Length: 243
Length: 310
Image (cartoon, rainbow over all chains, first blue to last red):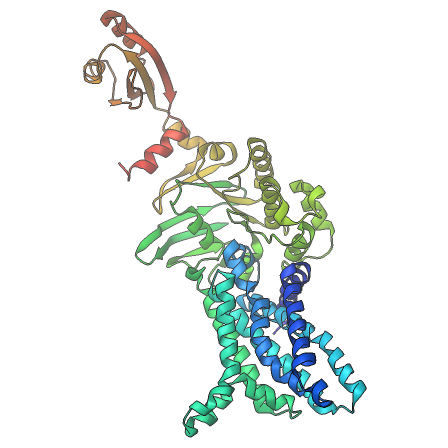
C-alpha cells in the first residue's frame, strides 16, 4: 500500500472526525455511553457493595453497551451519503472504494475509542481505594479497543445496507448484539456445537483479552470480523443499483 | 478528448441509455439535451465512472475509464444535478477536503477558485445554510478546484433565478474557452446561450448531434406560419389553405376555443401571407393573428423528441 492511499484514507478519516465533533449526534451518543457505563459502574457493580478493587464488572457490561453505542455512531456513515446523494460526489473524486470505507471505519474506531478515555476516571477511583491489578485493566482496555474497531466495521457494513439511518442502526445493533449474546445462549446448544459457536461470539474473545491474556487467536478473530465487514461493505458500495 | 462508443445501460429490463456513441473535442462546450428521463444523467454518471455501463466504452483523454478509473477521475470535474455536497460542513472545510483528496497543496488555489465562483464572502458559512444559488457555486468550485481538463455538469442551472442563471452561464462559457465542457439540460435556451454543440437525446438514444449554428441553418429552409381567425371552421379553412401555392402541410392548432387556428409548414423561400390576407378579405373572415416562425431550435427539439409519444 503506497503513501497516496494512506493519505486519502486519512483525509476521509479526518473529515468524518471533523463532522463527528461538530455535530450534536456524536455528543449525544458520547453522553449516553458515559451515563450508562457510569450507572453500571457506580450503581450496579459490586464496587461499593463489596469494596472490591477491580474493573471486572465495567468490562463485563461493555460489549452490551457497545452493541448499541457503536452502531449509533456509525449509522450515518454511508446511509447519509446515500440519502443525500453525496456518495456520487465522493465516489467521483479520485478515491477507491477501500479509501472511503477504511477511512470511515477508522474514524468510527477513533471516535468510539475516544469514548473510552473518560472511563479512565473509574480506574483512578478504584486505584485510589484499593490495590488494583493492572493486568486485567490494560487487557480490558486493549480488548475494548478491538471490540470498538470490530463493532465499527460491522456498523459501517450495516450503514452501507440502507439509505435510512434508523434501519442501518437497527441492522448494526442486530449484528452486534448477536455477536455479544451468542456467549449467553450456548447452553441451549448441543455440547458438540458449543465449542464452535463459542468462538463466533465477540464476547468470548473480548473476555479472554480482558482477563489480561493476549492470545493471537482472539486478535485473529477480531481482525477477521473487521476484514469480513469491510469486504462486505465494498461489495455493497460498488453495486450502485442499491444506491 | 472524450470518446464514447456503443454505451448502453440497462436497469433490469429497462434500457436507460441505448447504444450511444459520440466524441467531444477539446475546447468545446457540448450540451446534452433531452426531455426529463431521456437518459442524460445516466450517461453522465457513466462518463464519470460512477455507474458501470452494461456495455460499451468511455475514453477520457488517453485513459479508458474501466481500466484507469483513478486517472480519469483526476482529469474530470463533475457536478451532479442536485449538488449533493455535505450540508454539515462549512464551505472552507469542504473545499479543503476536496483539495486534499485531489492531492493539491496550499490555500492559494482555494482563494482563486472562491474568487472565480464568487463565494468569498460565504467561506465560513455552513453548506446546509446556503441558498440554492450559492450552493450551486460551491458545487462549481468543487468541480473546478483542480483546474480539470474535462468538466461535466448535470443541469447546472436548474433551480436558479434568472440572474444567477446568467452568472453561472458566464462562468461556464469562460471555462469552456480552454477546457472541454459537457453539460446536460432540458432547457433549450440554455443550449443556444452556452453550447457550441448539441447532442439531443430521447429515450436513451441520440436523435441529433451537431453544432448549434449548423443545426439551425439546416432547418432554416422551412418556415411555419401560424394563424388564428374567426369565420370558418377548421376543415373549411384547411381545404382552402391547401390550395395555396407551396404549402407542405396544414395542421390544426388546438387550445384556442374562440378562434380557428392552423399551422402551415412551407419552404423558407415561399411567401403566402398576402394570399392568406386576401383570402380573409374575400371571405369576410376576421384575422386575429398571423405569425411567421423560423424553425427555431425549439421546434427541432420538439420534433425530434416527441416522435415517440405521438
